[in-house]
Image 1 (cartoon, rainbow, N blue to C red):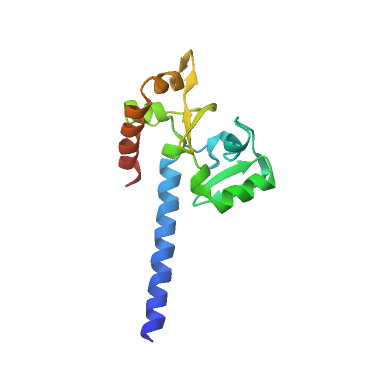
Image 2: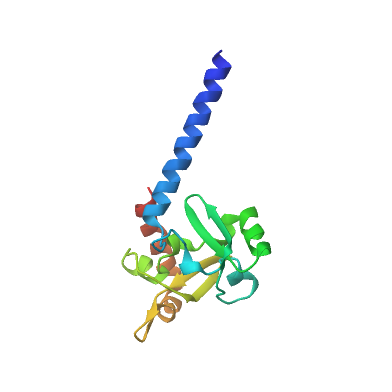
Length: 154
């Protein structure tokens, strides 16, 4: 009987933690109105193609409350095998803004950089490409962004 209670406790704890995590991600991540990340771009393609590629609705995958789209079934399977490798940093918000001011700022998914195997996205509109500014002080901005992002996800 104690084993059954223990198993049930672990089940409900794990389910509650997952639901809480998904709710937090929906609240904190940069998603469109339908819950799609990176404005529908394929997160795996940044790594495999070196460029931003539109994902397709038929190759969608929900991961912890966040929906990603992929250009192919192979990209979807690669993501499924290792989501933390492909997810954008800081919930898909502008890395520069997170580092400079601790703010969530929308991005241009075609403006990105991969640093140490991680995807960083940047704002790039109205003659303001924040990737250029990021590159001038990447170490400091990345350190600040890492700290600032923790305030949103705790």
